[in-house]
Image (cartoon, rainbow, N blue to C red):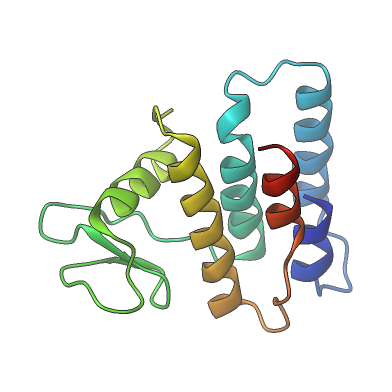
Length: 139
């Protein structure tokens, strides 16, 4: 989480709502009050995107089932910038506040996808490594 904030934040003015969210999130996780620990990193990434003004648009429908990382919304066709159908559906579930029953591999793929989304929408957001290190260590 620290690396995400370090690489994503470029504002010179305080972002009190983001600070409050991070503070409450950290305290909740440390106190084990968070109801869905495995999904916490995904929810964190999506909430930070919201506070930075780059929140993905959840316009998911049967006609627009593919999430396009570059456009930041669901589209009707798949291309190099879209997530596969099952990951698009999973992202939609997270965006709509559901608690999907996702495998470790799917959660990892969603995290990697959201980080790729950040790279499209935040200048200077690159060389992000801590999630890969944690994934290797926790295997």
